[in-house]
Amino acid sequence: MDIHEILDYLPHRYPILMIDRVLELIPGERIRAVKNVTINEPVFPGHYPHHPVMPGVLVVETMAQAAAILSFKTMNAKPSDDTVYYFAGIDGARFRRPVMPGDQLILDVSIKTAKRGIWKYAGVARVDGQVAAEAELLCTLRAAE
Picture: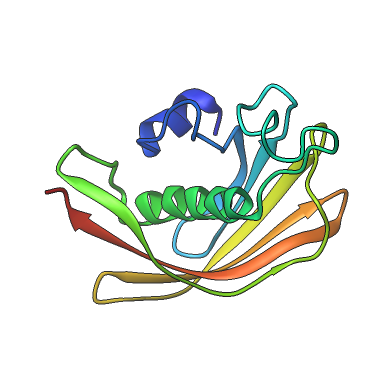
C-alpha cells in the first residue's frame, strides 16, 4: 500500500500520521509497515534537542496505526466520521533501543484475538533488524460522540 491508500484507511493526518508504506498485509493475520523517521518531525526540536530520540509513545502509536489498517482491511471496511478507533490498553511495552532521525522503523503487527469488538495485537518495531520496541495492543472501534 502506498501513502494514498493508507490515507483511505487511517483518519490521521499531519503531524500524527505515522505510517509511510505497507509492505505486506494478510487480512485477519498480520501487517508489515514502514515509518521513515526524519529530523523534520515536529517532536524533535523539543525531545532532547541535542540528541533527538523518537518518543516511545510515538513508536507505540505507530504500531497502533499499523494495527488499525490491518483491522479495517480484515473487516473489509474503511474508517468513517461516525466511528473512532481507540486504544483500550497497552501491555508489556518494552523499549530496547532508541529510534532516531534517519532510522527506518519496520513494524510487524499480528492479530492475537478479536472478540466482542476488542482487538488484541502483538507488535514489534525494528530498526536495522534490531528490536526497538514491542508491546501488546488492545484497540476498539466505537461510535464517535
